[in-house]
Image 1 (cartoon, rainbow, N blue to C red):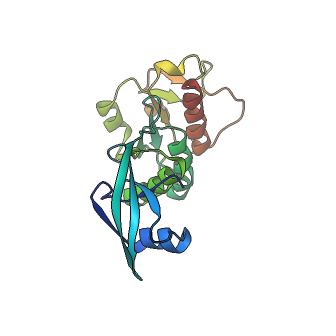
Image 2: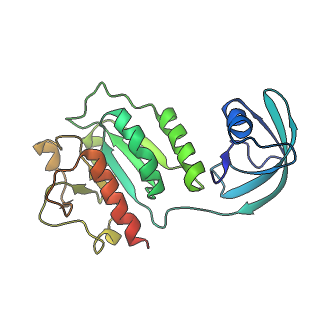
Image 3: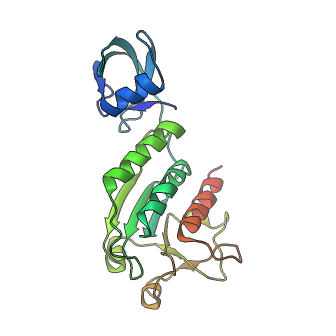
Length: 225
């Protein structure tokens, strides 16, 4: 664990309770007098607090010093991902966070099951836990878009990842910042026609939607090395 998230990190005194208290003092078993690193995932600072008092349900900490240390993706990369089973999204999200995806737009396309409802608060909590593990200093941006038409109105220069002879590679991804991944079964033909740029992945196998999302994120990460 690289740090602990607390919304009010940066204030002179920090009061810890609830889930953060349980994790800090019952799981990690920190003691009075120790220093702990906190982030608010908003300003790029690591805040170091000394534990002053610990009660049965709450602890009071005092700010000792702070250090500016941004840990961010090396380049902006926007994943537009057609909605699939939320449980699959929740399992995949930490990997995409660690791989440096800057933003994810979840889209309800024709083949997305409309009964799949995304809970952004739950997804943000998953991202917070992931950031604490991998050290990322700011939260990934998330949004939900109701259909492909709205996507085309809101964004341009979108590359559709689909079956195509021309492939997404380390050589061409540096010119790409925004890719769209379809749902299980892919986009319908009328939706596919909306995209002027289509690239495939260099594999003969059919990937699941989440596997394709991870694959393009890995290619983007490798390009930043």
